[in-house]
Image 1 (tube, one colour):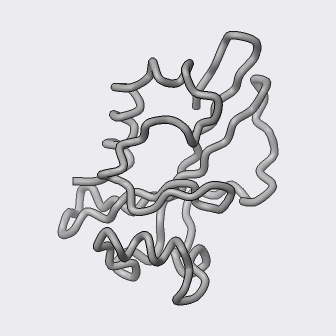
Image 2: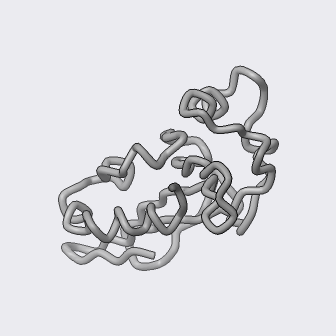
Length: 131
């Protein structure tokens, strides 16, 4: 079963790793629940679709953002939104995102509107905050 809740659970289970990594993308995410992982391209992560599960659909898109303060920095590549059409994320048959999702068995069009989440880390000296 795949969902944003399972993703958050892996973050909590591995929270000590946050202080050891330089970049959020270096966090040891549970790749078994991910359908894609990219750097510098929205989405940075996507959760696999949970087949035939109405409670936990999966398919959520996640953008990672590192800040070197405790204020939310700008989102240059993505306008923050709560939902996004997958057809606007995947452009063309040769899209890397499409290929990654299909390689793990996701039926991309089975969930045309995806929830979007942002994992933001603020760092100031030795202190860190996450939201």
